Amino acid sequence: MLGKTPMKLLLAAAALSLLATAPQVRALELKASRTSPFDLALTGKLAGVAPGETRYVSWSEIRALPTTRLMLDGEFVKGSQELTVVFLSDLWAALSVAPGADALFATCGDGYAGIYTSAFISHYRPFLVLEINGKGPGDWPPPGLTFNPAPYVITVSKALAPDASKFLDIEHKKPWGVQKIEIASFGESFRGIYSGKWADPGPAAVAGRDIWLNSCASCHPGPSGIFGGTKSERPLPVIAAYAAYDSPFFMKYVRDPKSLVASAKMEAHPRYTDEQMAQLMAFITIGAAPAP
Ligand code: HEC
Image (cartoon, rainbow, N blue to C red):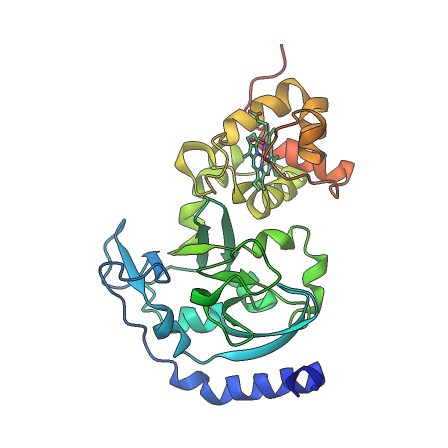
């Protein structure tokens, strides 16, 4: 039956039920230690949580927040599937967020990361997937999927945000295997690449910085400990050396790493235009020594 309900209708109903429950969002109970592999780790700017400390919230606690059911096509497995989700905005509302926090960083078990600003959260409406066809992460992967996306997936849907597909690196906002969420201040976390030699870098480098944050930072840490994924051990200064000394190699590597290094683990980025590659290079090579 459900599969035959027109999606628009279902989404409209979902939006209404969300509105009805939103004012009652209650605070999540945070625990000092992990009790299950399905607990979500929380760090960062949370009231009563010292910097560097981690708290844990159980799957069932999150499941008790206002949820929405979405019928989506091909999200995890072929065909239509029902997802039970919590919007990141509702998760945020259920946390005692400390003043100044305006961004959320999600980190996966393999070091992959996703950066969500408050503007992104309100515009693209990313959500945490709690159930696929009524089954929670303890019963994942769903039949037909070989990679287990547990414990959490964050994703966005063009059914909710039609312009999501136009966002250059939207795939990087859909991490699987999310284990940890950090509540952060964007300005504080990334001050290092918005100040000093990066304070006023010109329009090309400004656009390149967005590409770095929305794509490369999913796997490459920034300079001097600035947030980024740790899937790659090469931080920004190493990447900058490639771009500064051998830009043809750099461009080819970013677009198709396997064409240069057969065993490369980095995914290809074939969609970047020459202009976007130039923007990326303008950003990452700022302050790098010129080619000898
Ligand atoms: C999905 C994770 C991932 C993303 C996203 C990613 N990289 Fe990588 N990158 C890696 C890994 C892992 C390596 C290490 C070599 C390998 O195993 O492929 C690497 C290596 C590189 C290298 C070669 C460095 C070396 O020492 O060989 C360059 C250059 C590079 N990345 C640039 C970029 C840029 C620019 C972006 C953003 C457009 C980007 N990467 C996005 C994972 C990623």
